[in-house]
Length: 363
Image (cartoon, rainbow, N blue to C red; front, side, top):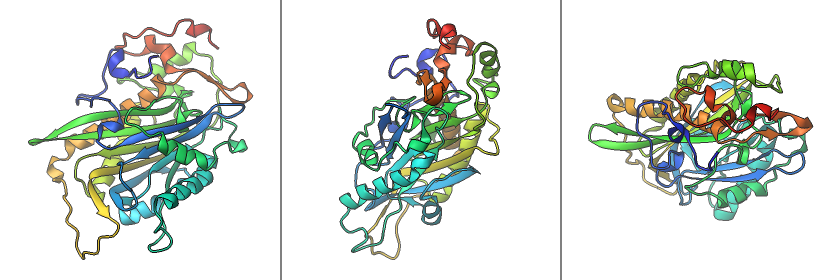
């Protein structure tokens, strides 16, 4: 699979809205993504960082919201996002048992960039989200270290890899290889055009449920693909970015629509699966040192918001599929193995991309 191949390029689209130029969350101007991938010895894990803008996030916070679809998760920072409606750090993704190290690494990064934190002003609210990559990664070995967070942030770019990279290295999706996926949609409302982009960390689902364009693709794959099964229902993190001037209430409404995009791929959101959505806008920002009693903010007309809702649904659905299309087959701890969706392109409705040569023998 080519480095930046996506579903549009392999013969079909999901949804009806046009995509951005990069077909990623980075189509929202200023947003960048960086990875640190760990794949030596028993490590199949890493860190992914999403930067909402290129300025000082602590001093210039972005309006934000979160929504817990199913709360089987160990994320950090969501309580304050829920209360204050802002994000003031890069968003860090990693594996479940590395939340503590990622938290420490993000705190150190923010302290280095802001000498006033904990001295002349309050502390900082690091946002860390996670999925359990323990099927492929030796999660007990705690491979992720605090310094990997600053490295991922420093690696951030508008052009970034997807699939089994960064936090997605050891993730599984519908019992195939999952990981990092991204997509974007252009939403036209009245006389204005806005961008909605999503990035997912996919690690959920049962193979027989995998659905692509309404077709139970996973059932056909299940009949032909030897599997290393496990009992982990998994999780998914969905990060939504937009340049539309939304309030935190409206951003939460975007978050809720992520569940529709997840369900379109076949998930029924299992009991032990953690589904969490985060959304932010680059348009409305909050100055940390603003002393005014009132702050002027734009708020979107709710009667015009449907194209943004559709954009979240379509981009989330495609981001999940992209996380699988980009990912390569991978052998992890104890010889546990995940095959790539790219090996089964002949099962995907409307696809013109050929199956990987010799995929049926690649057990």
